[in-house]
Amino acid sequence: EDYKGHALVTFSACRLPESSTIDHDKVLRYIINQLDKLHGEEYVLVYFHTGMHASHRPPMEWFYRAWDTISRTHRKSLHQAFVVHPTFWFKMVMGIARTFVSVKVWDKIEYIENLAELVKFIPYDEIDVPALVKHYDKTRNYDYDADKREFAQFGVPLAELVDESRPIPLVMTVTAEAVRETGLEVEGIFRKSGGLRRINLFKERFNQGHTVRFLEEDAIVAANLYKMFLRELPEPLIPQQIYEYLTTLTDLEESQYEYGAAQILSRLPEVNRLCLEHVVFLAQDVAVYSDINMMTVTNLAIVFGPNLGGPADMAGSMKALSHLTRFTKYIFSQKAASSFSQRRRIGDRNALSRKGAVFERKQNTS
Image 1 (cartoon, rainbow, N blue to C red):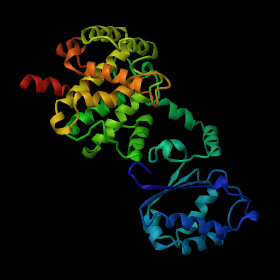
Image 2: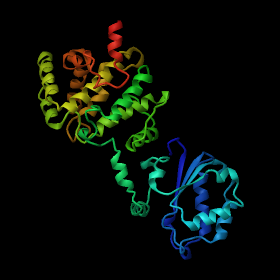
Image 3: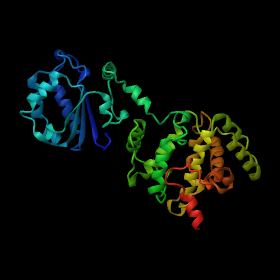
Image 4: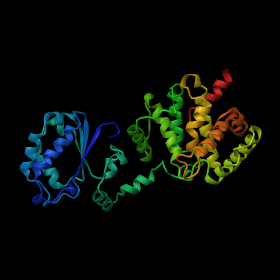
């Protein structure tokens, strides 16, 4: 999909075999067959003209025949067409095509000179860019893969995402703000799964450095992205060596466990601690509305725990989940208030999103 949710159809000229070895009419039938699968849904066409050689080029009459063969429904359903790396020959052919292509269709065609322009419209991971196209872009001083890495937010070490002006990663602050604005009363917030395609769409917008704005109905998507960000950190908020210490607390009585948990919090690197505070404050804000959203501290601990740390082979490990759930439930509860609330009480909002603390306001008015 593109950023607006339209279906995406791509065609790469560099993957066409030589004209002498294929039947172009079969190619046309294949294209129509693929368009038929959309059932009239609006779509965006991306055509990579890169690598089109004279030996691969269909004869001119084929283009006329293709236009006549493609149904009016498919033409009408075309939302926009991007032609990447158009050559002088292609533009000349399109100039001729203007004599029989309707103005409505013509206005939907846009020439794209490099991939930097294309990713303003299409998410990186939603499109299969041939290696030859990427290489051609590099020769024109644009590195598609390097640009992708430059803005990456997910799967990046915390230290690379924060500084003095931004002590909490962008993804965490933006998604937390969206949850606080529209998701606190949504049943199952942080438990329910959002649409995967829409989640990936927003993920790519973050990774491309675009401004991200969530709609009111995107609260669950924002909550999923918040957890996904934590889950994809190269080193989790609770690093492996500290998690191993956490496992030694299993059989302790409550008072001893609380002391041990406080020791864990004191051992965290500063950036990890700040981010964990951010998680705690958001979870507490959500729990205030548990009578509406059904997300109690226990339920939140169950869904957040596995995203905060654990062994490398945690998949399927009930013991690891038990360790993490108990610890997460403790830090989400008011028992751990002395470990976090002092920073919050004195007005330091570094660990909070811009909208501030719903939990604190509710407590003060109750």
